[in-house]
Amino acid sequence: MALKIETFSNVKGGDSFFKAIGHPLAIAPTQALLARLAAAGPVAIYDPFGAAEAVAGLIDLAQLDIAGLFVQNVAAVGDLALGRRAQPITDLPGIKARTVLILAFDSIRLADHIRHLLPAGAEIASLDAIRLPDDMRTNPRNYLDPLNFATNFAFFRDLDGLHTRIVTANYWSGYGAKTVALWFRLFGGTGETLAEWREAAPAGLGGIVIDSREVRRRFGLSGFTGQLFIHVVGAAGHDVVKYALDIFGKNAADLSCTHDANAWPADFYAGLPAPAAGEKVVLWVQNSHPAPIPAGGVGLNLMGRDETAWLDRPIPAFGSYPLDVAALLPAAKWPQQIEVRAGRHFVRPRYEITTAAGRRRMAHANVERIDLRPDPKIADLANLMGKGFILPAPMLPPERYRSLIQPTPMATSQRELPLAVRLYDASGREAASSFLGRLPRNHDGAYDAGSLLNGGALPSGYGHVELVYDFRDGGEADGWLHALFRYEDKKSGHAAETSFGAHIFNTALTYKNEPQSYVGRPPGLSTRLFLRLGPDGLDTLCHLIYPASTPWHAKSRTALHLHDRSGAELTKVEVEIPCNGSLLWRASEMFDQAALTRAGDGGYVLIRDATCRLFGYHGLVDGEAAFSLDHMFGF
Image (cartoon, rainbow, N blue to C red; front, top):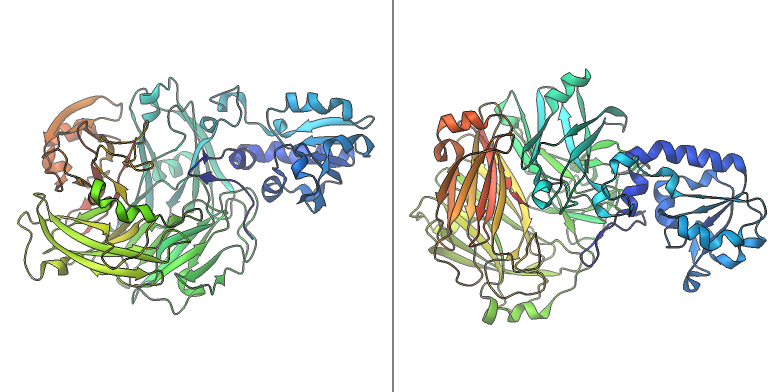
């Protein structure tokens, strides 16, 4: 059963209430509050904002002797919640209760409004009893301000020679944040707390690095696989905690990378590939809440089919479980796609693929939206918006790499995907295109971008592909176009994969919230991308793409700013990328070794362009043995 919590909507943004009642630091005070209420006697529940079911999903109210449920809104009278019919708050005087529990924060005014209605001898309690400590709150005046809950989870492992490394920067300082700190709690596989600490973020745009090896040494831990909860205190501008996550080990075959988890649990996730021959695909189900996921709370089904196989075991609060896809869907084979029924129990999950040769890679599924409907206007955008929605991805040098494209339905309403793929040389010249057709929801196609060349070559040796809507045979679309991109190294046998969604790029016209801007209103026509540098001698790979829905500036004016961990800029390199073109480069080739040495551990590159919006992919390279690849984040 899905949790009845509000998480994120494209209209209202992220909801903080579930974060507030489910925060790891709220667990102990919640238990104390419930124990005190249970000992006092019958409790009347006052639910002024309709939060009772959300609270009950994360907090065990069953231990209370509930005398009644009361609401403020007349329209809610008679509604069923907590197994009771809601009564008007004006009925409260006739109830035998020792305590009235207000299911709200910042409750002083709410309490004053009903104080005259209290049963004789009754006291008032509220969720203010479980508030975070004062030094954990960015905005003390509004407890549920999203900036008070700038949080996220990260897959975190240090086990059997495998390590994880989280890298980001204090980008909140760029929005006016003065003093920023990060609070961490590391949960083990069964949800137990392994470590807890707080550290100050560097001033300015300083780099932030959390390395599993250092954490393990610092706290004297044995090997672990779990999740790291991150809370940013003092945030400004963004309540989203973004980061790059590298997975590596002594064996180069373990090199992989992914990124932040998206802090809002969803009903569905999609873009989970079925295992290819000889592969094992593990979906890491990592509970994001202080309440267990019940048996039957998580399920898998083949995309486009309703038959669901459910995980018949519970997962403890904040626990992690490696769900072998084959255990639930033994017949599923690549290139079939799998839909995850998550019930809002966990944030965007990672999956891990291990090949028969022992090579390992990790990526993430994506949020499958339940609020979208087909938009008939998209088919008419071409006269003003040219290509309209574009999903760009690298075309790595085809003589070395095989580049695969798998369009993925990413909304429950998507019945089809009318698509074409276009291949561009790095120079911006269109080299080939292909109409993929009106792909049904249950399609199981994966397309080799190299086949578009028909045995020819790209003049630059590399380029990029763009998935776009194509309505030549009709069809419907909603703008939420996603795909998985898989890259296979023909020489080493290593592979990497990533997935993302389409946007409208580089046009002065706007359609709804496109071209998307992370700061301010659309159109977003500038670039600020974060590129972390590789640790332990690993080189850094970057593929910058200049997509354009309509003709834009002939060339970009892109600056690559190399920073050390303190945020100090060491040097700058300026490059130009042709419109509809791309630039594939390595840090070792772009910057001299002396500058990279000075950047050191935690150094990074900030990619800026005031003339156009670029899209980027990054990764690490371990000589000829392995590589990783994922899309970049901006702020």
